[in-house]
Every structure is written in structure tokens, then in C-alpha cells.
Length: 159
Image (tube, rainbow, N blue to C red; front, side, top):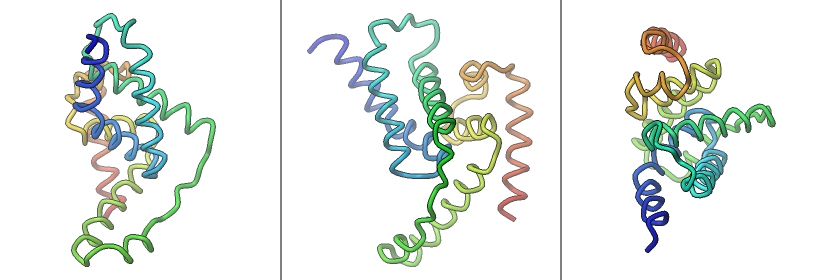
């Protein structure tokens, strides 16, 4: 197996779920999020030979994902459908309540300003604030302040 392919497979297995959840938090649509994740990894595959390791792989992959999300949202002011009817027909009562809470959270996140969506989605993925600052080009202090304000805003929306 080539080094390129081995690195790609490692990155894919390590980051696929995180990239999907980041995209889902951003666009609030499962199919669209899968498309974004797929496009992210097509870009990773194509750009991997040119990767200069100025940042870590995770930072680089998250940056690609964020750029794709921004581009796709600019191209399409798509309104995300509510999938509650499908949930009710396929899940247990406990699963429905948990999924509805998750849907409410994703809905609240989708109503945030674009930059705030990126920040909170990366935060929910467990990305450290220093790395988030590097990904989006803000200072660490600015990201820390924004995370606090975003959490407050989400709390108010979900109350």
C-alpha cells in the first residue's frame, strides 16, 4: 500500500465521524452533511500530496470542511426540512425524545451566525479552542469569549 493511501485511510477512519457531525451541526440536514463530508475527503485525497504540515492534519481537514460548508451555503440558501415524522415512525419513545433534543440543538445551532456555527460545531467535536482559533483565523481569546456567548445564546434558544 502506498504511503499516500495509508495516510488517507488513517485520516478517513479517524476524522469521518467528526467531519460528518461538524457538517451536520452546520447545515442541519443528514444527507447534505454526508455530501459535505464526502467532498471534504475527496479534497483531502487530492490535496494530501501537497500538504505541507504547517498545521496538524485535523486542523487542515476541519478548515477544508468549514470552507465547503460556507461555499455550499452561499450557493444554496436551502431550507432544511424537519424530519420528525420519519423519526416517530422508526424509533422507540426514548430514542424519539433523545433525537428530538438533538434536533432542537441542531436547529438552534443552524440559526446562529455562520462563524458562530463553525465555532460551536468544532467545540462540540472536542476541538480545542486554540485549534479553533487557528482554523478560523481568530485569536484564542476571541474564540474563548465567543464560545461563552454562543453557549448563552443556545441556552436562551432552548429554554
